[in-house]
Image (spheres, one colour):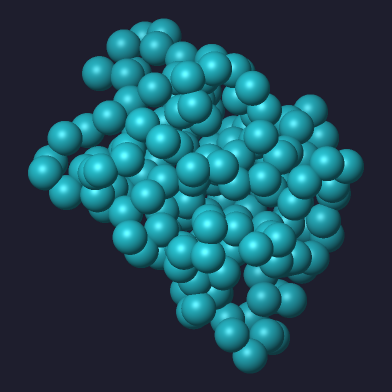
Length: 157
């Protein structure tokens, strides 16, 4: 896809090249060496998918998200079908995009156009995250696996 190639090509030319990447259905998300998030692609049909706020639905080149994660450094990212998850160095989880089926983890189906901290993990250290089509997963330091979102076909465990 030409858009994806443009995203990667532009990031690789930056002085602070990507350290982590994830590809969703219509978008890509990147973390640079300083833990800052960028995204590119199309958010058409998925409110907030790119994480840049209201009205941003197409980015043909990687663009840094507005200051995100409450100043925390991102260490991992996962792009799903209509949403994304970011894991901060301190173990907090942030989500944004389309909230259908509760896949953002905020206890409702509200869309979020910029990263929002998932408060359900307060007091826990998350070490890995994964965004699927309509569900999400997180692994905590104590070995517990958390799942939320659409549960068809037993995918929530």
